[in-house]
Length: 74
Image (cartoon, rainbow, N blue to C red; front, side):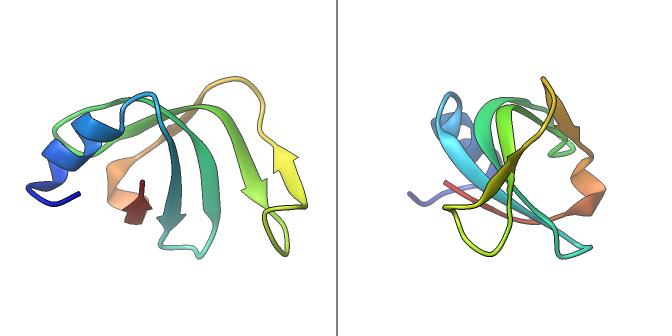
């Protein structure tokens, strides 16, 4: 996938993505939405703990403010 960041997000809607934050935390979940500020909405998100095998589920819908995002991996 290549192109402008919002094009990549558009192509990733409904897919599982990994989001890394400035704090070093990561979330893995289905990208349900985004806006021009790269605020993200994840469904069925989990927080990996020492690997993908050990994940902690996050309650309901997760909204991540774009200012905190370092990377989004489709």
